[in-house]
Length: 327
Image (cartoon, rainbow, N blue to C red; front, side):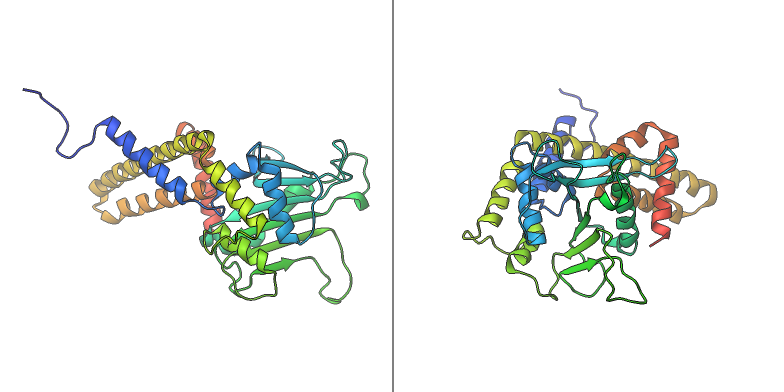
């Protein structure tokens, strides 16, 4: 007679692993380009990365692009450990004269897909911060200020960032007293709302934005969108992509479960001491929201580091509380 210590209905470790991987595979197959992970994989793909970024930029900006130097998930650190750094989803530099050596003179582009509707109120401050980090590296040594290259921050969202239902919001600095006065500092921010309706934009851009969130249909006669779709599906099913996502998904799930267990344990202790049921619920909700914030902002490395470093965890929680308080 075989004895088992498992509770009725409890899965074995191998069954849990198989179930988790099936969930991860379904999640990966449902991802669109608005999802940070999928977008990053396309941007960083050795075969398609540059052409992928070229198509997106040419459709958004309505012009041909030169040779591009593409870096996925580029981290621009703070000036020291006490200052916030920035994680750039797609950092793109257009080579000035098309040569390998003339990169410093090329325009800069930062493309950021974003699904964090709960933090929309801080979006202008976020783009301001990203631009400051980018611009600090946009001027070469011994160069004049007049030689600073143009920079574009392009936010692509599945929510309306400003509530006006516009497809595109173009933001540039200007003089308030003389709004018609030319003031060209070379900086531009574009907010693209994938589900917007207002604004005179081309059909190809509308189709691209729908494609980003997995809506609409791909016109086979539109070679550029068809090419993007082919790249997306090829990258999605690469062994490397599946392996990275499986590992990432498992690690995040483990951290989520751990956070839930810790929240329940702390809630029970608090409940015994103070008789407060709400303490448990609030702790669980806070930790779940905290980890979701990190995950949605592509900071899985911070999740892993925080699990081993209490001081770093406290620093992240402080950053999260500050971000939420500004909403």
